Image (spheres, rainbow, N blue to C red):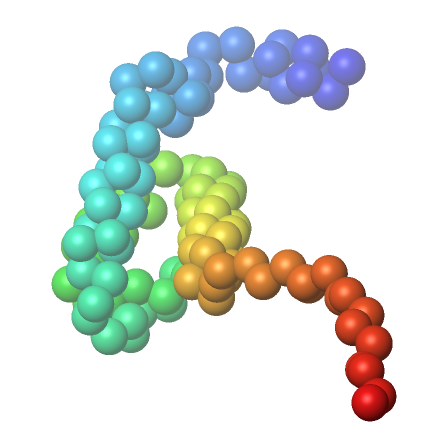
Length: 116
């Protein structure tokens, strides 16, 4: 009912950020930023994004494009998703690096000592 009242008051207002072309621009800026993060992952991360995401200063321009082309709620969502995926990948990779060959217990056979 609240959306009907809003639509009745503002019938000509179009939210351009939800149009397909705007979404595509947002996705393109998002992909460029995260590609920069992957490319510059060996650099010192000095800039702070949302959700605890740190990124290198070399990616600052692509971050600004990302923030300018997407809604703030979308930016927070994509940052949280990226952080979750990176931490999950780190946990899975860490498990594989610590896994060694399995050593199964050998069956114990009792050998009586012979006393002569």
